[in-house]
Length: 438
Image (cartoon, rainbow, N blue to C red; front, side, top):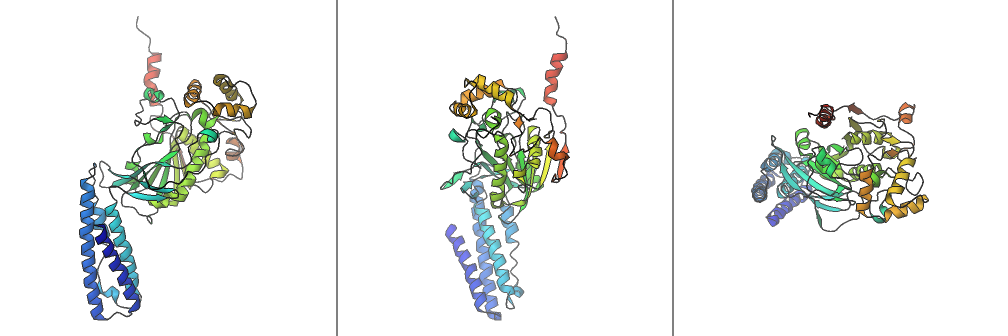
């Protein structure tokens, strides 16, 4: 049990203390300590195996994490020679203490892992990835910003509030406000989660064997959807994490009117969805090491509007240093009509559809902040797309300009087109082109 493991831990610490006081170690003392170490390792193995069996028996998944314990125990070679000399014994003890502790905790929290963030602790779950022998820890619905509601509607994201206790991270967060019926048209199967304005959360998928010092490469996925629909929870990062031994993060960002409406002045500069992505990347830099990731090896990748987002982040001054590689799949910032130099037309349409009327921008933002989620969603549904805008901050210039300039700072990138891109549209197109029978 926990007390037994604590006693074993105390034995290790005592041995480290004694090793510091007695150098070189007498042969008889070495023999005695080796015996104690062997007993401690055996006790640790038994306790870890028991904890693993208990955790596995109560888990709904089929993954058996015993290999994690075995792998850790195999790093405990009780070699008598390591104790002879003045400093090597202490160094060996330190390393074995760290390995044994790692063994304890990997067994104890394997099925219900708890990790720390800058704002509090979160509990995840263990999943088994079909076709592999690797378990993956998932942590779902971790907030990377305050809920963008009230005065934070049409405002830059702010750091999340800390919480006490352990936050549950075993269920998907709400999707950002959008017309969820469109997903049915595209045959997209979304998790059964609500649609809400409070949606700035991310999901983490990390191999179950990792620890704070693993420093695995990190891949941050940005979903597509024409900047009006989509959700992080459509994409399960477990298989990628298991097969490639990486930490996968999927993020959400504001969409439609809430994500990209702009008054082209200080009252609503726009690009809120892009700013959410920057906030998520900052969160990754500050916290991903706790999940076994390396903040110095972050790659962002996305498809369609996600590719546009990745491309835009490459060009954005405020995102420099937050990632180190970029993959753009079927989307870049130069796509027609996805980034506009002016939002005047959208402003006029939103003013008319909202009932706010042609008023000054400050009053317009105040009026829109008073609208319900349902009223905002009705406006989003009526608009086919709300493009991002050159706002002077996230995008100081239209993407064409920095790409052509001599001072452009590139990052290692992959740009391509996914197989069967827009394949979902072929049946619709075929139906339109096929003559109807009378």
